Image 1 (cartoon, rainbow, N blue to C red):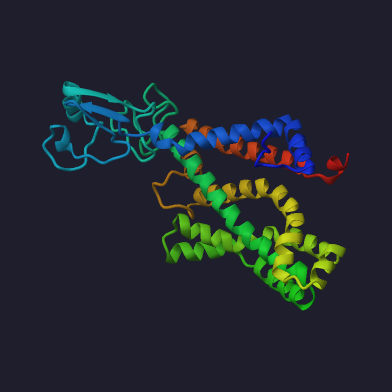
Image 2 (image 1 turned 180 degrees about the vertical axis):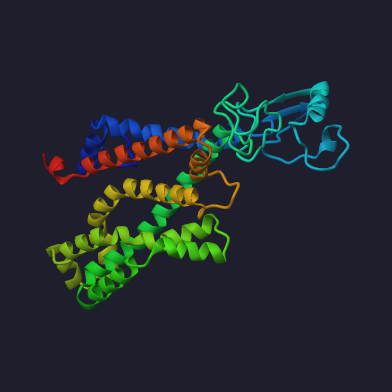
Length: 346
């Protein structure tokens, strides 16, 4: 019988069993992965381009490739506008089109609204439009993808820096730990919001700009936890034995002490991810986040505040943000229970 290439220790099996036993957290993980997976294919769910075109015995994929209007018998060599009735008639005369379920992108303006924008939900715009005539559901799908990707990148980068800083503090201790602690006290006292306002007045905020600024202030969240684990483990017998055998400090930290510190790190990561998503949403709500026109959940909430006569804007944004954060909190609680040493000891 061939052994499985993925061998899990008994402790890992117990942790997975405890995680699955928490039904709320277990199903919340699958729900979050389902929503995030659907948002990753946003172009195939909500787009102002057809998924597939059959025209004069040839197939075209506008959702992947750009085509000119002249490719379908039009007059202008510019990019094809498939929502134009003239071009749609030319294509349907010599073929057919397969559209996504939602015929709008996050930045597509519906110029055929029967009422002034923001328009209420209808058969064409399932959750209505915002104050610029853009489809709310399409903006929610694209905004969910952008927010989660931003949160994942911010969580990953800030966690790497925080774990490295906490490891150096806890392992070496002494003067290194003292200097790092004084630096963290000064760094944590800086007014993050004021710095963002100053930066936004000098540079146009963008995805990577916001990621860099928030990463500069977010990496401190894990330093204390990792530092405590390294302070506790650096005097263990196996660490002393490895040091006596001449093993390098970097290898001891990475191979022997870091796995113990990663338990606390993994427990906090779902909560850090939810905090990162809230940070981006709050900045967009205040107008200090992504550039105007971006697919943003915070911008949708801001429009709901400014257009109280259109309750679908605020309700849609609130439901998506509340649902996503609730799922992440439930997942974090399940991970915390799975890594609880008291449960694993039992």
